Length: 55
Image 1 (spheres, helix red, strand yellow):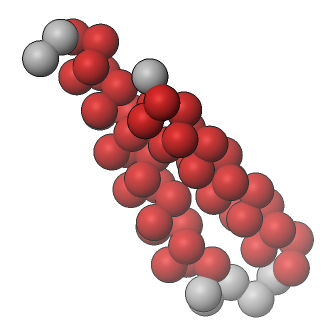
Image 2 (spheres, rainbow, N blue to C red; image 1 turned 45 degrees about the horizontal axis):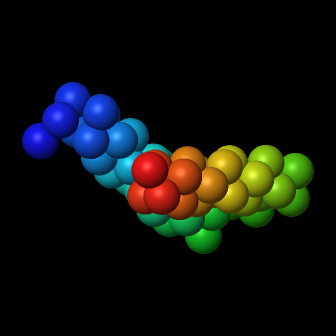
């Protein structure tokens, strides 16, 4: 496996982990401002996962 593929796999796995864990946290957040900020972060992690998967 090339170093580039290994790096993309590493990025993808870490982004998935961040996304999945934030989704769990969102279930327990009552503050609407924090909830919105975390949802935006989930979207960014999702974009990262998708981009790494396309490369």
